[in-house]
Image 1 (cartoon, rainbow, N blue to C red):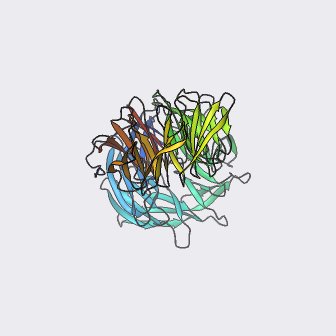
Image 2: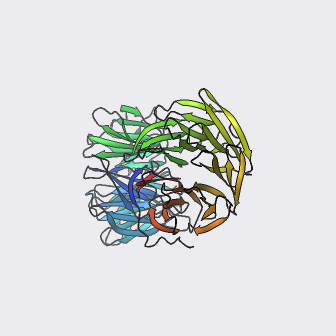
Image 3: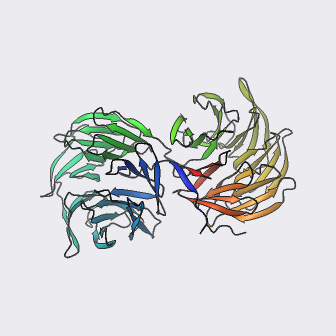
Length: 607
């Protein structure tokens, strides 16, 4: 059955996005209307209303958004993306009022590094990434390229950043050992560079704000635009640790400075002396002024956003998200309000409908592979790469229990029984273990060995007497967890990633690297049907609705698909993930679907 064609299939409605790509330099912006934040996540540009958090989504990019610029009037937003080597990377100009695509510009190879609008909205300058190295000037109205040029002299290093001056024919580029002032000659369709002279000072510039240059060495150079000469440099000591990532000039003339180490300061324009300072989590990558700068927003590599009022210079954390791949998602049983995710060293608990983090549990330098809520809601059980099972309180985050040496090669899958008395775990070595939870500890009931490789997924039957385990060894096994014997083994030429019981529990469905969804008979282990679930890449996540009528799949093709179980056909498709989908859960009320991806995003969809 070929059900992979998603053309013409109804689109799922995206309700809410938990996430922000804090690695994009100056990716967080405030729209000139003063009412919306603009920022990237995966291949989506998000508009978020400041007063109530309402989100809108600009969808059109085919890969991760790499840069964003907003025109001075606010009429246009421009965004660039990355693409695979040898392929061109698109620039999209969006009509802000209509929330539609105004133009798609295709010239740069592999990556668009930076974008800048002229003050009158007429021109857009774009800079290609390392494999491209060119600067192009575009006419916004006609959507045509006016002219282009290599960004740097052959002797100089890569160009990294662009900034338009307050006149429509002058802009500046800068990068490794180079700062250039460009003049746009419209009549002859040319751009002419003037190399700035920094004397003995050799610096790599990574951000510009007229006409200050922030350097990887942790200092700031001030240039004179008319002469192209260095007029000042500082601070002499101490320099900004891990470089100056981003700069903004306030109306007063003082500067806001964000460093690679997370230091955020206001400093004097005369001698770069620090006037105010605060330490944020991980490197600062964006500073966005609202209005005249009475309020500003700061984004960091930890995917955090902060709000400041210029008066008190105190950071208010307004949004948080994972900054690395999300490995698993679990929804609290019987509710449709609380869910948990794990990524890297963090477990986070969230409210559905309010992209707000309720709790964060961190185990430094470890990785959480999988998690689940016990059905009574009293604990979160979690599987870690250090071979330990950790049980936490879902409100306090307190560590309630730790099972040491649960598995060799890490704990890779975990599930709890409905009676909340046992945990079933799987490991990188292929063993499946059943643990009994006791008032003050635990005991190992049994180890079951049949899998030859990593256990990737475990589901427990509703009567707590059986479970099913999927493994990358190409086997799916149904176990009796009262007598601890295997009842049935399903074998396929694939690496299984995920398995689900149909609610009536006479069938299971599996999926994995062969891109197929297979229905199996639980009693005799026979294949009932096979569906082609994806055109490219593995299926990594799958979940079935409580009534058994629908299931959802997602994987490396970044598409979330909802299927009719009986018909074996795709009924809806969700396109918004910028990375491979890693896990999916449907809420028990069938109203909401949550999917997570390798770029740290959590997406909430309306069923």
